[in-house]
Length: 202
Image (cartoon, rainbow, N blue to C red; front, side, top):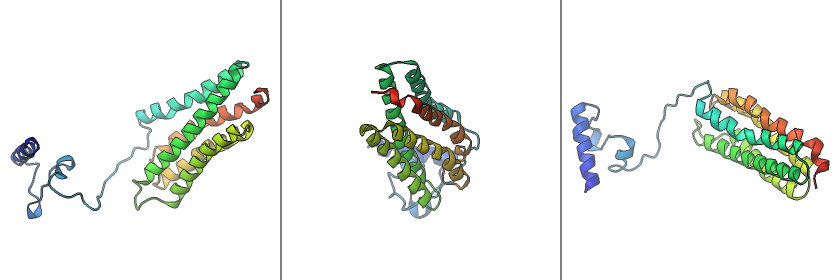
């Protein structure tokens, strides 16, 4: 009853203000969060999306914030000695694999909002990143740290190359063209910098 009263009040207020107009055949044309209460959900929707070329501040925070553990972990692995070096190395590998699989999810998520539906390049990139992240954990578990570092570095380097291309073709947010090349330098350099100390690990 309370919901029905709220909808009725909204209709009356909207009609008085002029922003709520009657829809054909008596259907309710209010905002989406109330419209579904009176009508069935549509089979499809059309959306107009405006994307900035400049990187939004929130993407700067959540883009570069997760990159800091790479730099901090690699630095501490170089400065620390056994057994601390092993721990820092392991944490960098685990973090890198986690972020890699997360970015696979980002690519899949973007594909849901791509005009015309997901493209083959989006799906292939998603599968590559997920396979690289999970494969790195397998290599790490098998005791192959050098291959683990190279695989993860290759995955992050590919993001720095492929995401700007995807942004220009409308398969990723436009600001990825500016964000990704700079962002991916941090994990790539951090991971490769650990190669010389692999032999000092247990």
